[in-house]
Length: 177
Image (cartoon, rainbow, N blue to C red; front, top):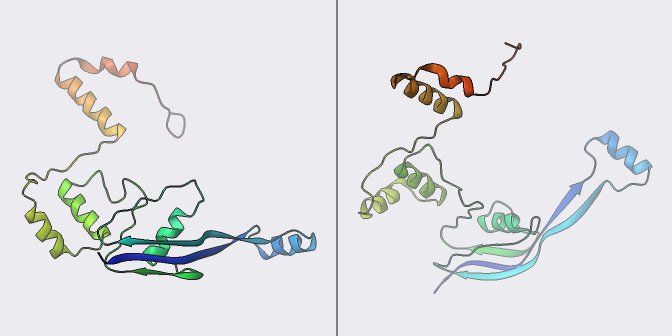
C-alpha cells in the first residue's frame, strides 16, 4: 500500500517572548532579565502513515499535537527534517469540528466534505450513492429566551394564565428597571 504521509526527523522551534513593547524589552535588558526563550514544540519526530489509515494523536497539553498536525497539513514548515504528503489530508483537532448544530444533516455533510477538501461534485456523487439518507430536516437550536417565550405561549394557550411567571427569577436590566 502506498505511503500517504511521511514525517522524517521533523522538528519545529518557537520563540516565546516575555515582553511585548520595546520599553519593556529595554528595561528587562538593563536589569539582566531574559527577553525571550526558544523551545522545541516538535523534536525529531519520524513516522509513516499508509494510504487509508486513520491515526489519532494523544498527549498532554503543550506536547506538540497541534503543531504536528499543522506541519502535516502544510500550514507550517518544519525547521529541520521533512514532511511529505500524498493526496488529501485533513486533520480534525476537535471531535465536533465541522459540525454546526443549526444546519441540517445534509448541510453538515457538505460542510465536512468541504473541510476534507472534497469538491461539491464529489460530495453530490457520494451523497446520492448513500441510499440510507432519506430525510434532510434542520435541527433547531433554541436559546433560553426562545424556550421561555415558547413555554409562556404554551401556558397561555392552555388557559393557565401567566401565574407560572411568578416562579421565574427576576432579572434587572440596564438602568435598574
